Amino acid sequence: MSSSAPLAGVRIIECSALGPAEITTFLIDLGAEVIKVEPPQGDYIREMTWPIVEGTSLMHLHVNRGKRSITLDLRTEAGQEIFRNLCRDADAVIEAMRPGGLARKGLGFEDLKQINPKIVFCSISGYGMTGPYKEYPSHGVAYDVWAGLVNVATDDEGFTYLPEHPSTGIHAGPLFGALGVLAGIIRARETGEGSFLEVAQSDASAAMDWLRSETWRAYERPESEVTGNKADNFERRAPGTAGMKEGVRYQVYETADGRHVLFMASEQAFWKNFAEGVGRPELFERWPGSKYADHARGNRELQAELKAIFATRTLAEWLDFGLEVETPLAPVNTPKTLLDDPQFLDRFPMYSVEQLGAEQIPGPLKFQGEALPVPTKAPTVGQHTDEVLADLLGWDTEQIAAAREAGGLG
View 1 (cartoon, rainbow, N blue to C red):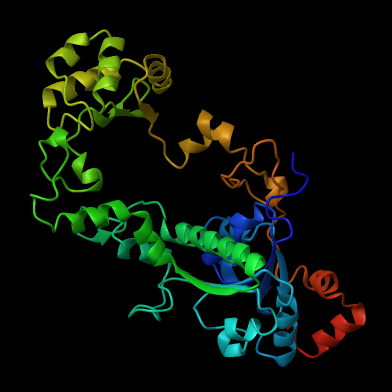
View 2: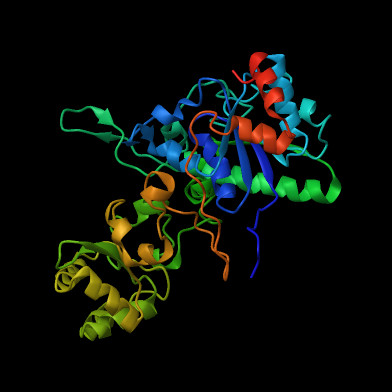
């Protein structure tokens, strides 16, 4: 068993505003040290979105957990010099805001690599550093609607609105960024050479949904080259769930307790197991379907049979049944019911209010035989300023007081 966290010894200096700060949350959970450099007034993430937990936003409590906060006024020479000193022995610097802000203060990659050739500099932003949208102000949902992940809905009065949807880009962007930062650090430790990488949250939305976009592009080729699958008689179906709307053997059904179960017997073997398991082998005999990827699309007669069958047992009973006869069934959860799902409870022992100020989901990575470190509560503005200057730069109280007098600490 390892005696240290996987990323122990990795130090990252972060300048962030709002959600992109999540780029280092993933690394914090694995043991990295992250110093969050804030302007004197602090990152206003603490007041953003909802819920507000005892005066502080849940977003801040989650994405900035485990970090130490130092306030620096980077408009001053004193503040800039402190920042450079913090970067001398760091592995990476994160610019989690509009690109170029640090460079305009003489603290960009080209500047920092003069004092730390191994520095990995990562810029994470909404639309990235190039392209016609690069200067647009934006929020998280913009990246998902841009990438085609959110369907526009219309209410009874004819007004369009954004329906409930998962947020992809604002979480996937930081995840891709964390992967890139680690790749840069590994290479820098091997070669002594730093790197400058950037990631756009909009890019991440598009990358996560690659199958649908690539399918539409593939369909631009002639049907002699690109077809649908065998189970659909090679007809080219729309990608994503559009091809499942009329599905029957791959569909959601209501259970006896008012919940819903996802039935996924699109493989012939699973479908046979199900039919025989419920004592209805004639359903398989009448509609055996193709060997793979057969949803029995449009078969309303079979769908009515299945609707009646699924209404006879509770969700929990169906899950037990699926395991018993080996046919794929899954619970249909909401973000609320998920937290009480037995699989979730086994995989995600949540951090407590006492630990982090609000119940939070830990990172999903698990190192067998190891307990990953529990992060500390997200910091207040500048909470660790004196501590960081003493620990990282070896400053005494007089030096810290002089920096504060010079305006470097705000």
